[in-house]
Amino acid sequence: MERIRRRITDILPGSTGAWVMVLVTIFLELCLIFLLLALDVLPGLYLGIAAVVMGGIDVLILFLFSGKKKKKGKQIAAWIVSGIMLVVMGAGIFYLYNTLDTLSKISGGGSSDYDGEPFNLLVSGIDSREDISDDFARSDVNMIVTVNPQTKTILLTSMPRDSYVPLHMNGEMDKLTHTGVYGIDETINTIQDWLNVKIDYYARVDFNMFVNLVDAVGGVRVYNDQDFYSHPKGWHYTKGWHNMEGRYALWFVRERKSFEDKDEKRIRNQQKVVKALIKKITSSKTLMMNYTDILGAVEANMETDMSRSEISGLARMQIADMSPWTIKQQCVDGEDAEMGTWSMGPNRPLFVSIPDEESVKKVTTTINRTLNPGEED
Image 1 (spheres, rainbow, N blue to C red):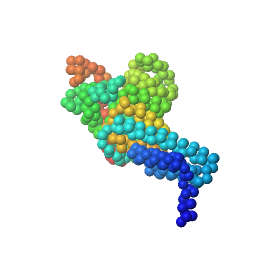
Image 2 (cartoon, rainbow, N blue to C red):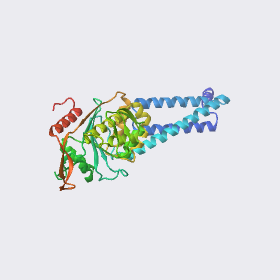
Image 3 (cartoon, helix red, strand yellow):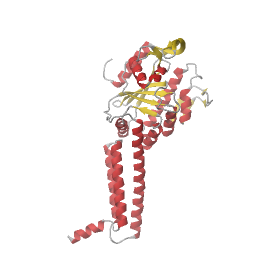
Image 4 (cartoon, rainbow, N blue to C red):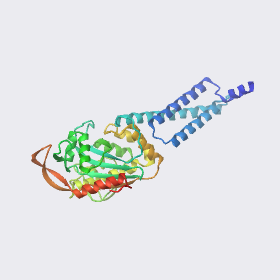
């Protein structure tokens, strides 16, 4: 028994300070693991690897601190390794806590887990420049993002802001952009009635979020097929590829006066930038390295009814599966006209876009095929 006792003594830290360092390190590791489990972003394999690595480092620290006889080099190495671990654990805990806090701020209520099924997300870009909580701002950008994780396909469906459609609340004709004045639910329900598709989630965003998000992923690379100057900034966009930071991407997607087909061209440019942004975000390297930056970029300037668990589930799925997504694009076509609207009155004709019925049918069919590729129309 005495031999066993001495053996155990030899492998344990030989001083009170060393014991404190080991126990603090283990405590921080447990906090980190708890936050990783709460965040639920890393796949189980990655969590297992992290636990094994931390366990291995703990064994190394114990070995370096062990024994009654203190070897100076060994003791110095022990304190250096322990110090590095404390810094890493502290940074990791700070990173994960902020991530959880941000997710709680931007996500909707509830704790539903993402089940891996295809879904439609409505991205509603509002014209508010200062406060995303403005529930009654015009919906200037309306895009349905159809996501099918099973086929790794994303479909972007844009609807002109001036689309002349019947309001859900009363059936009266108005511009799609004006539905935002009556709240996000009116925008969602009006689009569901019009296109005969179900909107599963929404995300309300503003200009600031767009700029911050592009910057958070390190900018986007976009091809510009027409030389033009932006209004009112006067920035010159030459024909060809551009690496755009946030503000230049915003001026690019907002421009319409420089183009003959105005809003149609603006929609195509919006889709180009959104496509490039999605590719950047869904890159496993970008997602893992910039996850907190991405969430921080949208924290104050986005609202969504997706739960924290659903957002985490999507991130976990993408991190586990390194394969790229196929991103497709489409748009509702329309004919320019001037008509009275419910919100502004029948005697005040406004510019509108009368949706082409064949285009609407094609858009609806493509959305449904993306959601359920094996089903017949």
